[in-house]
Image (cartoon, rainbow, N blue to C red; front, top):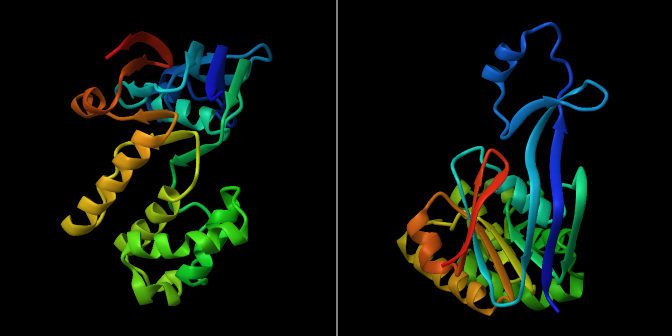
Length: 237
């Protein structure tokens, strides 16, 4: 059964090379989320997430709420397996698809078609599977014959279209999204949002991080609010 369980999880990042600057000056220059502290070896660390406990079960659409630096993106990267917990245990049952970095794995010199295969393999799919998905990716992206050209010739908007279309065709039980994408021109944005809503409706579990409380309340049936790496509220919506 699809399920996510976090048990007393903490994520901490060591900071090296602070030199003789005061803690106050370092804190003012620090851009990473969380609280500044020292570990058992007296090495400065940022406590990005602390004492995280929750269970997410099938049917739940969970919204991660909080200001910049609250730990939302760190949480998504933890769930995606990009970060490992410093302490505690995390169990994820189910295949994950995420839109955290839609440019991940793109090769500037490769064509759009080649990048479909490259990024798909990086995301855990087989070449044969990505070949079967290519017509759907072509249709969703709207890039048509541009897929025969190297990605370095693409505008930023075209790259976003390609990365988004590849991510949206992945089969998964758990879908992770960092902000609700608003990409491309009006016509593409309408098509992209319709596809995104379809994916959200069909996934067993969805976790979305956003600053937009209205969006989270319209899409999610559970809201987890973070402050300085702590869960301060976890309620049904």
